[in-house]
Image (cartoon, rainbow, N blue to C red):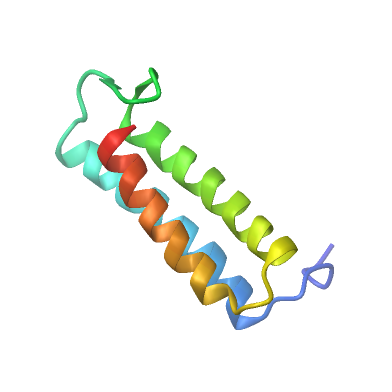
Length: 93
């Protein structure tokens, strides 16, 4: 099949590399220090670390899509918003 169907630029490789490192890091963290019982956050959800990572990644995707649709600036601002959002999710959700 090959990999010609996707534009493998350094940005694309970095994106998938970061996702893989996040998943590997969360796995090692869970092995080294189990998360225990789910935590009840401000949204009324019981979430584990993995749930909060998923919510962070999903929300970051929507932040970037919204930025592309509504703003004309560089995506670095969307990345900054996504990082702040992720910190808030891990702290309060």
